[in-house]
Length: 337
View 1 (spheres, rainbow, N blue to C red):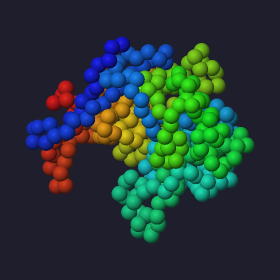
View 2: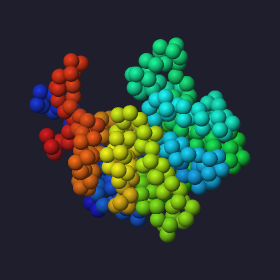
View 3: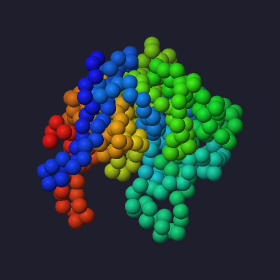
View 4: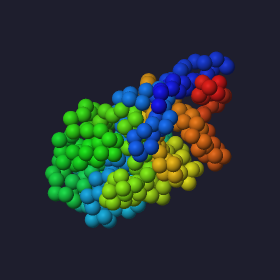
């Protein structure tokens, strides 16, 4: 499919364009063929936290999740970039307690919760954020559970050469249709390795999760994809949290759109009914532009019904307000400006 132009997301002030963000996006099927391209389908990106469901595949496939009695909520947490709200951190603590570990085993560093109210709770209690507050602590708990189940060393599980990461990279490569054995990688904010992948490959991997076809993936992997999808749908509050775009999108769409954000302006969406995957990346890493571009692509696909529009407008087409609450501009696709 010939490449289209990147999506342009603009911010306005006083009726004029103040800033422009260019966004590259691809929608693909499980066969690896793009159906919609905005910009460069072969653009190399770090998908960051947007691929956590792929990173969780070995947790389920290995039998670790079943052996250690992981709940559906905990499986959702393994795919999450949570807010560090109390119910998130309590779930991480309960999970680690059950497998006989403490948060000291987590390789992700301490991180302040996103919401000011949760930050204030820590300050009032004269406490500092700890590792369970890290938005990736669920993913890391899953990695530790896999290592424990398979008899791998727990220390250094975040190292690219560790068996835990070798399995994850093999699963991601299989799903994306690329060889990640010697592929370049970076270190994510949570200390785990993150591969560099073409945008089309990320969309393909998402489509394969969305389809979960036994003929394409085999019984074990297809079942794992469905298990993780169902967990995300059943517990959207674990995926992000209060007033987070991914949580609200899963709820508003009744699980028809499973979106997952990543740092530096990345989004991945799983579209089970269409057996399609969506991946996008802003050139400048702006998260506000990524959410707006997600809306634009979903609208192109005809997937924005009234409930989704109502729930997602504040996330994806938000007004820009000053400190007094006055609307001074908006964030919008340039084609709507």
